[in-house]
Picture 1 (cartoon, rainbow, N blue to C red):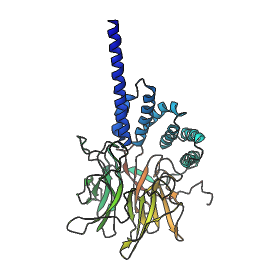
Picture 2 (cartoon, rainbow, N blue to C red):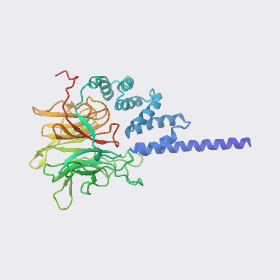
Picture 3 (cartoon, helix red, strand yellow):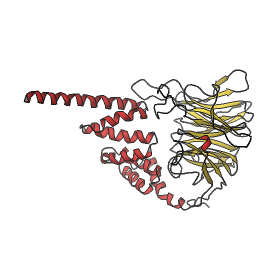
Picture 4 (tube, rainbow, N blue to C red):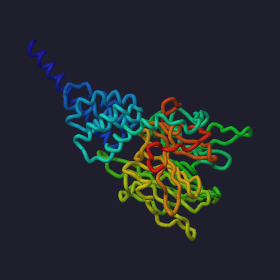
Amino acid sequence: MKHLRHFVLLLLLVFSCQFLIAQIKTANRLYAQLKYNKAIPFYLKTVNGKKDAYKKEATIKLADCYRLTNNHNLAVEWYEKAKVYIDSDLEVALNYGIVLRTMGRYKEASKYFEQYLAGNPENIEAKHYKDYCLQIEAWLKLPESAVVKNEKILNSKYSDFSPIPYKNGLIIVSDRMVDQLDNHNYSWTGNGYLDLYFSWLNDEGNLTTPVILSKTFNQSFHDGPVCFSPDWETAYITRTSKEKRYKKDSLQTHYSFITVVDLDKPKKNETPFLFNSQEYSVGHASISPDGKTLIFASGNTDGYGASDLYMCKMQDGKWTNPVNLGPDINTFGKESFPFLASETTLYFASDGHMGYGDLDIFVSEFKNGEWQKPVNLKAPINSSYDDFGIMFINSGSGYFSSDRPGGLGSDDIYNFTNFKLIADPLDSSK
């Protein structure tokens, strides 16, 4: 009987080990395919296992999954557990610092950036983020740059962002159309794919609950943001590809591109934007009110960072070759979501310039033949969280997007009024 008990225990141990191996393999495959939301439950089944190597990997990857799906509170919880592995994996220190900075915990974040820099002294990202954590104290004492409120009629419990004027209302981007059977949801977040929705102004001048637009605007995968020619006859829609770059068990991603839709034709007439690429993502087009300037974001590896802003000019009915806006605008990070309020005024989002945390919104003026050093719009338009997708109704009011706490969903649209540009106390040139 004693030998039988030992045999049963050994058998259970073998099955337990095989179970853990299967769970971690599945989790890692999903993680490599950017399916972070789907990977989480498999890591949770692995993290309490008795194999130290599996526990370490599952703990770190869980923290990363929650960070990459913007679940900041759970990311902090798991990075706090993962920090015991920093000596053998310094990326934990960098990523923990990024999450703490996102939550406005600047002093703690700077310590982790410093810890990462001890082993990677030339890392530009960590250097800048550490400096920003120290410099932000001067900004926290500034007066507010605007009055901000949640535009609840436009928002849902999902992600809603990037409003843009369209005829007698606004078009927004949202992933609120969730497939309850999970047959058509985005595996990164677990929500639906992004679609374009329209909110019109009623007779009282109030925005109405957004309704999904037709197949002229929306296709099977992500759609949006969008911008329009001045006559409303041409739409420039950011979409994602149906093709995946890599095979089943390695990295998979649907790169973005711009589709040009002729809305004036009886039947839908789509053409690809001339400067799309299958090597990197292109998207977030914005056209100036006179229709002569187009600025878009691109992950072109010839740029300065993760994504840069490029500009085209309309000449003889065609867009000229794109020109990178240069190192005063573009950084080591992401520049995206441009909005041309005029031919010479550009708003955009960046996580590379001095800011509060993740994406902040900046403005640059075109003077003397070049775009000037960007100015941060300051709080409360900007926060330590993602702030992006701004549009102006006039010089002092408009809408922007943010995933700050207190909203209805993951990203919400906010209204702002009484905007004024606040001088930067760190700018020694003024």
